[in-house]
Image 1 (cartoon, one colour):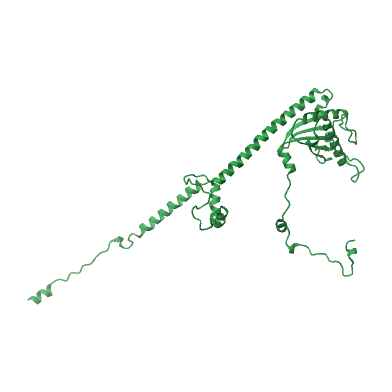
Image 2 (tube, rainbow, N blue to C red):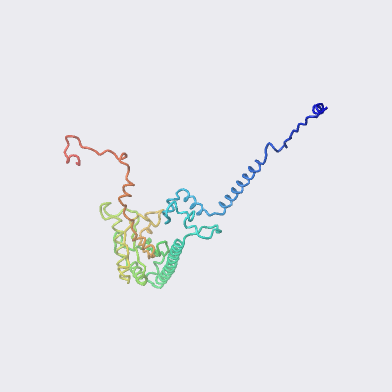
Length: 326
């Protein structure tokens, strides 16, 4: 009986059903979190780029382009100096504008002070030149001998200073025709100018100009170049006779017809003139400023390569040195 009961006992098989999400698990959550993190980093980068000045962007780009070079130029110890990403970046990390080191800031302030001082000096100098211009106009109007020449005396402020031009007019020349002999009315004008200009510290330049009509015995003889220079020197002597110190004249030159007053008519009488410039300090410094000579390295860098130079000419076999230079 016991054997029959064992045979009749049912066999039970348990099957475990897996859920529908068992295939994917939670991997998608990790991928989504990575995507959100990347997007947040991207928008943070865009915000930083939008709030950074162009100068800071260039500095960062230069640093990452050559970090060792910039570290050495800025006084760092090289690539191992990692106390700051960009040297001279300042201390306040919340500021969106660039910051500089204390030494650079002091140098910048010093430069600004120098520019402000120069601007103040220039304003004072221009005001003084304006006073000279007014005084000259009053002198010309008060002198009956030269009052009739007021239309021939032009006063104007230029970048280099106060320019005084005395021009010829039809029937009222400043010099004897073809010579540097000063006419009496012109002498009065120059003497009055010399008495006023002698009271100011500014230095002067004198320029003589002629018209474009040919003069003299041609290019190799006494021409408009010599005539314009002689007339400028004659004017200088009359200014000195009126009270202008000799050392106040900085330059005297003749320009012939190279810079006409009336460019539409190079032969017009107004092109024959004397130009006096009461120079500003800046114009005077620019006149004395010289360009430094090129160094041997700069000359070597500017020289064309050897392959580009034409081959040296060699004389024929039977020629002598004298015949080669004949």
